[in-house]
Amino acid sequence: MTLNPLFRETLKAAALGDSEEANRLYDQIPEAEVEQYNMFIVAFFAICLEVRFKNDQSLAAIKAFADEMRYDYRNAEPPVKQLVVEGLIRGMMGEEEVLQEISPADQYRTQLLAIRKIVGQSPEMQTGLTPFLSDAEGLASQWISES
Image (cartoon, rainbow, N blue to C red; front, side):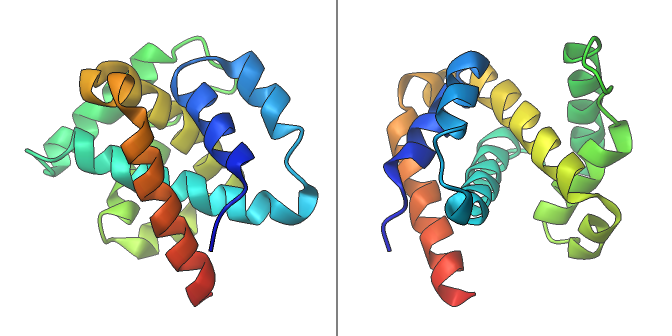
């Protein structure tokens, strides 16, 4: 299954910090495809977590990342919630029951903020985002075809 190419461009703009362009592109995604776009975001978020936590997946590393997120986005409204960041990452790393405690809106927002942070701190992802987006597209397509 091939996903709408607009998904890739929208998420690329968001990941690289061009929120104005990301919002403009997002508004062009057909309502019927928003759920597929959200799956694409989750898939890309999973890949970002692999990059960020490849050497250390400990609770201490997750807590440190959540602390950094709260600091980096300290002026965000609404504020970034430490437990949402930690729970979202732990949920993606296998503690799926934790995800039930986080609203879909908080999951979506936190994923996008974390993606922006991880990509911004990863020279590998900044200079070579295309293969990561392709991997996410493949993963999302697989999930969609299985659902």
